[in-house]
Image (cartoon, rainbow, N blue to C red; front, side):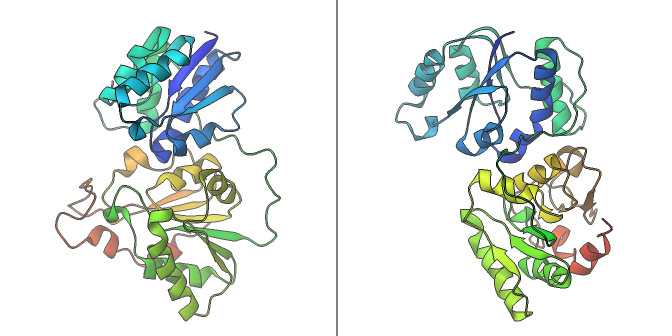
Length: 313
């Protein structure tokens, strides 16, 4: 197999969890030339990958005639030995169908038993390509020109989660943890454009506590910059989110706070310096974007003191 077209997952975290499966393809086919097709956010993961020869951003959602755009794009990409899509949508199935490839495969869950998403993606590749590889660590190839690591240790806190409010721990608790660690670490607050309010709440709390050695980068970084900053951290405190998986790829010591989601399926993969913090309530995991019971106890009952007690790195 010389030429491979891969449609990657849309979400940042899912995309990173697909990297062990993709690396296994490269392990089997070291000379393969890969074209990546996917969202603007996810394609950034492969920006510095040595086997990726072309990246095409999927703008089909912005087009008036989405299916025609996907058909035209698939034809313009040329001929491939294989097309793989890590997505399950109808549009993805049609995109794969439209491509000019000898072998084609769309992601599906072959194992119905609960397992980590990394295993699901890896099973997909093994089934389509008739291989028997085990997934190794998450992989993000860093920018070769990244700046040197800061002299003082740096703590990153990530209060947001794009899935919904149920996955978010509280700004006041994040601030208490950051304040308690501010003598040991400089602090970086992360967040997307939609999470600037949460980050500002943390910032206000830090200032009330007399903490000034922080940067609020919420809404101020693109994905490449986010990856660069996280790769330099000494400690990361986050909810179940895309940045959590970025940290896992770089083996950053991480405290991951879980509420409504399944940590056995989406926790950090093969990061030996990762600790999961959760309450194990009867209502967990509900997998809802907002708390269906209205109390949000899975997050509300987690306090800053509990998180600080888990820092043993």
